[in-house]
Image (cartoon, rainbow over all chains, first blue to last red; front, side):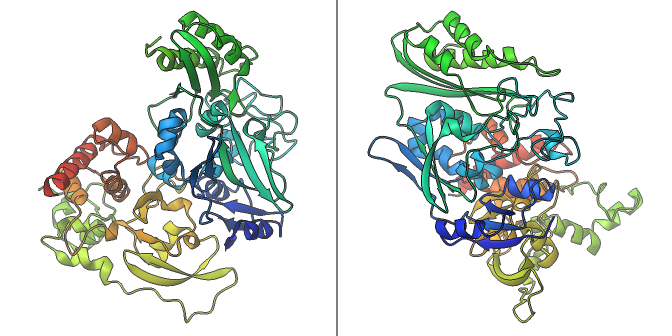
Length: 331
Length: 225
């Protein structure tokens, strides 16, 4: 493992100013992504600023009904927080479907947002990868692209999925990313935070230089809503999604008043399916309507050599989740 | 009680040596280093006490080398003062500097769970922590799981249920198990235990007996309280 200078931050401001001193500085929170990738020499910081003990560890209910989550709240703490379990079940379920007991105990909310892709060509350190070495190409496009490669939001430069489950739930709920940098604080809409690879796949998020995520603020829960997260994967635990769906429904008898749908395992970023939601508003909760919405959600999907199966799988993840969440029945 | 098989023991050269080996110091040392020593504490308290008897490491008189910083780590109740480089990983410091080799290095990337220990009572992978991150924390390793020569119920249950073969993953399995059985957020049913233990990989495939051991320890703890 490369040599590192370690500094523990005593305040958010001090963390940011320390981070700004050299370009090759990384914020260190849980360490579950950063230290893994430093050991592989994929991420190459000279210095780490440990922010895990900063006082960003609260879950607060704001007066407007939103829920403000400190960046350093662990995935375990967030999943089991009473308000999250009761008002944002989809988020609790998504968190608990990810990683393992030990990793969730370390991993933080902001760190989960910032986790890197699981593409083997990114992680192997030698293959062509535009994220790792801009301009070197994408070995995944013509290579083995079955499990952690996307069918939505891809480009001819990168097709890796965003691996988070938590972020899929947050995309469905709607959230604001609060960040702080050398020139002050600002807010970024969660759906604008992760960037599509396009022609610059090494740019993965909307953070500016030396900016630190301080909070994730969830939109107020929809009144009388039901929600659920469904994750489909190669084994029952401790595996990234092949396809997953987060759904939130407000029902009025058999009629859908409001719908939120987001997808994981199939997009290059946490994927909100806005048009599919529109198709459901005012519709009755039937398998036919759910299937139509699922088809709309996957309309622009582009399969690669080994992942065409993800298109029907993602549709099934949507339909089944809507059926279970909306009607209690299994499609 | 039965002994675990010694077939995969590094100091087992031939099957013929197996029986004598079971009582030799090297075998004992092996058991101690895989963290099962405490299981025999009732008959050999010296093994169980070994970790606690080791003197604290104190680097405070040593000059700091370039890139090093001085940290204090509290492990199993014992504070140690250490000069460590910034990139020193908690797992490696425990094993190489403090000689607490019960915590195992498996994948070194947070994927296998062999390095699981407790930070302030919470199970984490020690391979994905820098040592300096844990100044001020209460670190508990497998060597600190027993108390006053009394095995933790999880250790007793792993022994009774033969919940291991080679033993390499065992200390990590037991540390996760000891944490989850007291966690009110984790269900007591078999499916919840399997899910909660899924970050601990056992290449020998002792999962069935591991699950039995965890559930047995749970019922013993509940029966005692």
